[in-house]
Image (cartoon, rainbow, N blue to C red; front, side, top):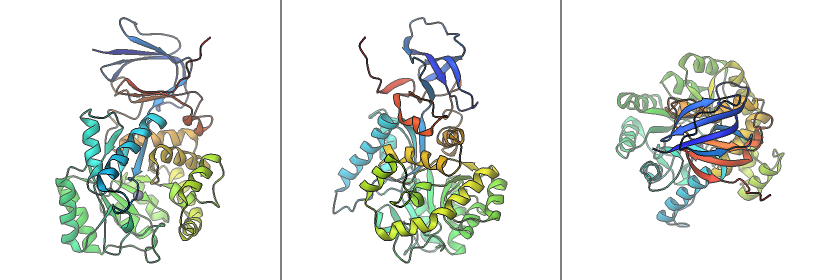
Length: 406
Ligand SMILES: [Zn+2]
């Protein structure tokens, strides 16, 4: 049995908004066994004690909408792409404290492969929830990335979904409409599936009890997805009041992916965003499309948030170590409080992935996937960047504290 005691923490448990000072957390065999505040401490016994010196202890962060890099196989062979994806995931855990990811489309089931590699302990990585391919239509969305699979007709969708299930995915990523980043015929206000295709796709997922992560970017697509039982709606760039009502009625999740419409040279306003845009070197036409969609997207984000729609944080951008942190900044820029943003990236994100019972908050009985940051993220959400420690199941997987010698 291994026992670790974290002392002198300022605890943000993601249950109550006020940080608890002088807190101690005991961890045994990967799970939190005791939490004490106001200077009370559990028995030390043979525990390894880590004095956090007042730093902020909180649940690890999550990003619930991700993809591997988009690289043509001619440019980088498959094996190297798979290795690169693993590197991106592991770096996000150790460099940014992102302990969980939900995939939204990958080729060759590389998400399933890495999920298994991490779960078996072959590599120390974040938790990963896999979907396999991004299922779209011929002439659909996301085609140049290599991660999309073009399906047509009810049978085409049913067969593709069964193949994803057979390959070990956790959920199904279904594309209902166009996007911002695409060719001229791929428009986010267009829906792509016919009614019989939609009904067949949702029916087979329901029959096999697989949750649908629905890419839906216009009111018709959002409403179709919600009425047919989608677990989460991704993007929702354009919605209407009826979409909001359906969200509240069905209890489905909304993952807004603000980064897609907000991170352009014309919109960036801090050094992290500027550095990201410079390195991304996006197509001019895509920047124009994002700029044109941004205000409406921000408006529906805010409307959904204010209406009490269940929302979680997903970035849809890369590299993964920067993606979730940038998205958190955008939530606050668009009117979310740091508290709402933190919940979206912890408790709500774990709930979207179906693991709220084990993860997402600092509570007795839960797995100790935790981070320590030097400054209060409730004062400034970008303080999550001041990472000191990352724990996975109570084990230190990253230590960035400077060992100052007196
Ligand atoms: Zn995506």
